[in-house]
Image (tube, rainbow, N blue to C red):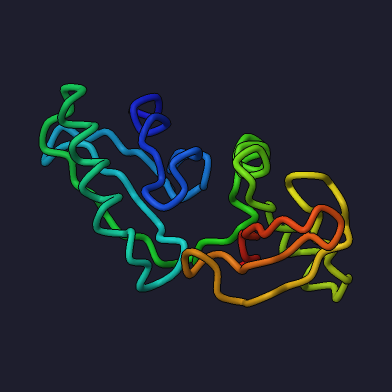
Amino acid sequence: MWNVLARVPDPEIPVVSIVDLGIVRYVHWQDTPGPRVGLTPTYVGCPATDVIRTAVKQALVGAGYADVVIEEVLSPPWSTDWLTPAAHAKLAAFGIAPPEPSERALRGAASVVCCPRCGSDDTRCVSEFGSTPCKAHYRCEACLEPFDRFKCI
């Protein structure tokens, strides 16, 4: 079941899977009523939650896992710390600056945002609101390219 879920893309950032994002909290196999999959949305009210639930159900049923129960897990809330190393690499390759670990942000360390295209740290935040609610919009002052940064949560 984990292998099937690892092929379900995030609908807003399709280069990463829902497993890469760390939103699949558990997979429990039970005979009755069936397998249970716990999903934690990236934030409460995420517009992609219903799409993800449907994609998970379709992928698992298509792979022969009938009677799948999808459970929403809100505690603990999702954190960007749950992104896998593969997710960080895929986000950067896609042109999205991956987030710093939230522990570092909590310690008050200044966050350096590097351009995912040229690697320069001469960047500035244009808007806290990017192409999706989970991203902020930045601009690289070196190569002049705009890019999104996955917000630290």
